[in-house]
Image (tube, rainbow, N blue to C red; front, side, top):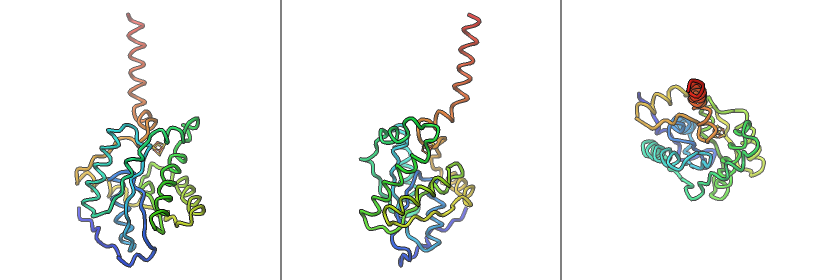
Length: 206
Ligand code: SF4
């Protein structure tokens, strides 16, 4: 597959852009689209929602590999990786957790942007067909109003399949669940149910 990534404009018409990045595969299309618009994003990896340090490290390593290929400057806030922040943010609202998860990650992104002279923020979460786009936009607008940093609520989903195909071609690690413990449980729900049935059946027959 031939994909051109080198179309950034050093004049930076909208100023410096900070792109919140959830993982390497989800960065491919947003980086390309933003560069084609004439922007030259820097990436920020801040995702305390990711469950398991080994999973965090795996996604981080994949992002680094992706960033090297894309020539994308990337900032990883590893010393701020603290899953307790995520669990506190969603406590007692686990069934409606995603908007709170978006806020946690994007709030830090906007603050980082303000501290480091960026004028715009966007996020690779807007690439995924599985995320709640309206909730992401609502959080982005709220943070824009609060900080004065512009939020670019682009729709990157038209490149969904292209991004999947390219990440496979490049051999990038593609995770099977969104990130948090609850999303992994959702993913494995059928396995747990099957095991529960097996256990019940074997205790009936013993
Ligand atoms: S499912 Fe994804 S977006 Fe929703 S809370 Fe979990 S990690 Fe965050």
